[in-house]
Structures are given as structure tokens and as C-alpha cells.
Amino acid sequence: MSKLFESQHIEWKETWRDDYLKWICGFANAQGGVLEIGKDDQGKPVGINNARKLLEDLPNKIRDLLGIIVEVNLLTVKGKELLEIHVSAYPNPISYRGHYYQRSGSTLQELKGASLDRFLLRSQGRTWDSVPVPGVENSHLSITAINQFRKLAATSGRLDDSDLSISEAELFEKLMLTEGHYLRRSAILLFHDTPERFITGAFVKIGFFRSESEIVYHDEIHGDLFTQSSRTIDLLQTKYMNAAITYKDIQRIERYPVPRVALREAVLNALVHRDYAVSAPIQIRVYEDRLKIWNPIVLPEGWSLEKLLGEHSSHPYNPGVANCFFKAGEIESWGRGIQRIFQACRESSTPEPIIRLSGNDLWLEFPFKQNVLNNIQEIQEKSAEANSNKLDKKLGNELGNELGNELGNRLGNKLGNTHTRIITEMKKNPQISAKQLANILRISTTAVEKHIKQLRESDKIQRMDGTRGHWKVFNLNNIQETQEKSAETHSKKLDEKLGNRLGNELGNELGNTKIRIMTEMKKNPQISAKQLANILKISTTAVEKHIKQLREVDKVQRMNGTRGHWKVLDV
Image (cartoon, rainbow, N blue to C red):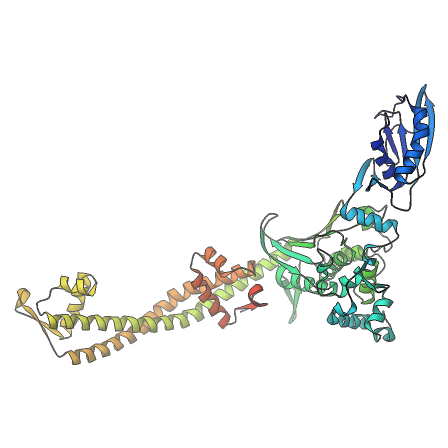
């Protein structure tokens, strides 16, 4: 008799309904099982009234609707008649009215989408990457990617020289990337410039996050899988992570929060072993204190997370892809990828990664070591301080002199022009008042009186007959010449005075603005001029001028054009 609990092999039902054909279909698509009719949810016999009729009808109904043969037995328990339907596991997929079901634990699940694809392929003894892709020819693949593979394979020594000198068609056949006249999915992933044209989500997304909900900037890495792996690793280390720096004698040693060996192994594992039937790309999230990698996976049947983390043999989900990465010397074929990640972290004295598995979602998280973070922060602060001091001094001299010259010329010329206009108006109207001059020149009466005082002190004009008299103007040409000389002298004095003062005040202020710009660029290499303007509370035009000056003195550099990112250079 059955034990009093349901399991992946046992299901109880009080009465028969044709809808229970789904459960029989689910058992057939899993490991087989028994459907017991005439028991309640606690497994207690309640009996059925039409047991003998069902005994005759069910075998034929199951055969006609599911196409399988089952064993139906009539039992009597405590005076109650029950039916047991024994279902065997079938190697080929079984459907009920066009739908596929599978028993998982004590539940029934309808297979759809990627789950259905995996089930159908597995039942046919195929892998996802072995499926042929019509419409793609050898000429559509990247010669650059193919030649790169040949170089890697030659370096690794895992392909003979004779194998490396054959044609592309022969090479693909030797690597089992073809089926008849078709290329397989594995060939598209490995050697096509844009594999996502045929395989949705076949790329990598990287983002830098301030928190779980606040993303600062991000990148997408496309191309063949060999290109994706190398670019992803390089971009993570050059843009998304800062290195702690130490010195051994005169040798500079850079230490990243995640050891390169561990990072490389994690990225390769994600690219090679992910479930490409899921249309979402690999996602890598970088925070101030950790790095997380997500990819969809399918564990071999019967495996658990504990089995994955422990010692195990190699069971690649995409054997065609894995074989080419092995031939290229990029991975091993002993099922040691996870162990190598942990070993690399232990050898570098960094925290071991945290692995979480939820359904088919695998999260690999690398926590950053606190002393490495402290070292990076200290380096950034010292670099910012050094940048500030150097920029203050340089900008103080350069900007102070430039601004002093410009303002001196402008102010000197402006003062000379104002004096000339006053004299001209006095020539026209010798009895003109200071108030009338102020209205004409559109300046204050106080300013006019100051200009008149300067003109009287330099013997350019004279007041005749007191306050009720008139103005006498001396030779205007001499005055203009004198004013020009005065303006030039005034300009030179202002140059010297303003050069020193502005060098200290404006130079420091503008230098600090540039330091703030460089600091924000370090935080967010993809930051725009508009975003900087909002942060610094200045105009976008002013920000663009500062950036231009920083680029001219090689303090910042624009990488990869307008859609690229900022690289802040050491001063």
C-alpha cells in the first residue's frame, strides 16, 4: 500500500475527472508515478462508486488522448474500492490536447517557453546549442573572430597545426559546429558579429549602482562570445572597479577588489554555460562594495546548489560552445570552474563569493574587502588633493594673467571712451550738468562726477565762473591721445594688480570647479555636461569651457567618441 503522503511519484484524488489526464501526462514526462483514485488529501480511502466502469474505460481513454499505455488496478481497502493508475516514464515527449505537463515535486506544471524548449530537446537527446540555424552561411561569420580562435588554439596547443590550417568549413565540421548544410547555434554564438540577431539576449549588460534602485551608468557588450569575454573583463577593471596600489621597491602593484583570475572565470562561466533560451542578457551589477553577476542556468538533472559547489565532473549545458572555449585554452574541461573562483579568492586573501540559486537564476556575488576599499579611497583623496594643488597653482597663474590682461584692457578702454564722450558732450553744451551727462551716458550721476574729477585733475577741462558758469574743454585730439596713453597705462597697472589678485581668487575658484568636474567624472564616467551643470549649479556652457581646458592640459580624455565615457588621467 502507498504511504500516507504525496510525493513526486504519488498523487491522490477522491473522484475521477478527465482533467486528471494532465497528471498522467505529467508523470509520463517526468520519472513516472501513481495516480490513486478514491483517497482524500490525507491519503485516507474514501472509495469511488464507479470503480469497475473506470477500470474498463480509463486504459482506452488514456491511450487515445495521450498515446501511452498505463496499468490500471482495482483495489479494495477497508471495504472501499479504489483505482491505482501506474504511469511509466516515457523517453519521448507526451502532450495532452497540445499542451505539455510535467510532475515536479508534488505539483503539476505546464511547460512553456524556454522550459518547453529544454524539455523537447532533452527528450530528443539534443542540447540547445546543437540546433541548426537555417539561413546562416560560413561567409556570414566574422573572419576576425575565426582568426582570433585559430591564434588562441595555436597558443593553447589543443589543436594540431594541421587542424589550424584547414578551411573554415572543414574547421567548423571538425569542431562539430555544423549539421548537414546548416550551422548550429554554437557557431553563431562563437563567430557571428551580432549573434543576438538570431539568439535574443546574447550579450552582456554592465551597470554601476549607488543602490539597488539607483543606476549611475551602464554599458552593453555585443559581438561574438570571445569578444564579449575579453571586453567584459577589461571594461570591469578599467571603468567599473578601482585598484588598490602598493609598491614593492620601485615596482607598482595594482590590486583589484576581485582577483582577475576569479573575475575571468566567473565571466567565462556565465557566457559558456548560461541558458540562451532565456531572452535576457547576462547582467553584471557593480556597487561601491560588491560585484554581482546574474545569468540563467539549467543544472544537470538531480543536481543541487550543494552539488554545484562541491567536487563534480564536467556537464556543460552548451557542449559545442564549451568545446571551442576549451580548444582555445580559455577554460578547462574538468568541472572545476567554481572551485577555481573560490581558490583564487582565497589565494589573494579576498572574501569568498556568495552564490545563490533561485529556480534557474544564478547570482554570484563578490564582496569587496574593507582594507582594499580604504586603500582605494585614500588614493583617490590624495590624487584629488594633488590635482587641486597643481591646478590651483597653474590655473592661478594662467587664468589670473589672462583675465587680468583682458579685464585691464577692457576697463582701461572703457574709462578712456567714457572720458571722451563727456568731453564731446561738454563741447556741444558747455553748460551741461552732471545729471544730464548721466542720462546721456546711461550711468549714475556719482560715476559722472568721478569722471569729471579725473578730467579736471588731469587739466583736460576747466570750470569757468563757478557753479553757475560753463565748461571749458581743451584740445580734444591731445586729450584723446593722452586718454589712450592713460588707458594703456591703466591697463598695464590693472594687468599687474588683477593678475595677482585674480590668480589667487579666480584661479583657486576655477581650479576647484575643475576638481569637482574631475571628481564627478570619476564617479560617473558617462556623465554629461548637462548633468555636471546641475550638480555644480553653473551653466552648461561654463561646464563645456572647463572641460575644454581640462582636455587641453591632458587632465581628462574622451574615450570612444560621443557615446563613450570620460577617462580622468593622473596629474
